[in-house]
Length: 313
Image (cartoon, rainbow, N blue to C red):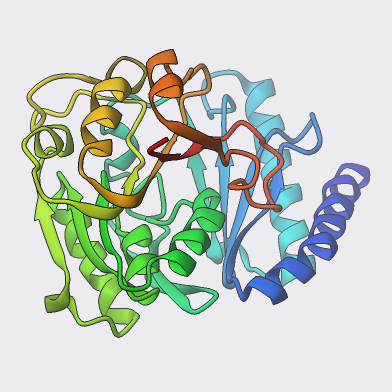
């Protein structure tokens, strides 16, 4: 009972803090809890009246003592979510967070499908809480989506490694003409779904299935805004070579900067914690570090990604 009170009290405190953010930003998806209490090293995200709990390093196995602890924690969290947000157990989804490589983070983990749309200001995004480890919407990019939405009017926008196209939606609703590039047909179809639920005319924009690295190196078209949010690593069979953001960002950024129209902007983000922006990039271009500005207020992890606004000097 005492343990349950600890997590319940923390969730209640966190929700109270987030209420202004939820109302002012008009959001239905947010991070409620992020390893606040050492005894409960979990992440809890809310999607409307559903919850997603990420567990790390507490996998059920042969250790009975550990199993008892995991079940106890789950029971505590389920009870707290039920009491605080009226979320029943059948609307709580458990996912195990392990270190991923390549495309593993996007692989299917369940057979059943639960898809619905969540609001983020004037935008809507389809999420899937069951089929994949990730839900289809990276909550930590909410501030950058807002920036792009507010600066895309009458702009040509290129969204690379686009995943489910949330940046593309932000740009299109902001008045931009968007080219969305991803290697996965599944995620390009998902991006089109996101356009449809936002009543965006798909034929006014472009969707390209391609290895983004190869696409970039062969590109000659010019853009006003380019969004580069690559994975840390990728060894997908569809790519011509293994991608490493630390090694490869210099080549990609230099190429993309040559494709910007005058006054154009490149937004570059990645989630490699050890990442260092190369000296050649810092010396060659004007760099504005948006990292802390681009991390949502509902996130405790201030190192979840790095984000830069890059322009010509």
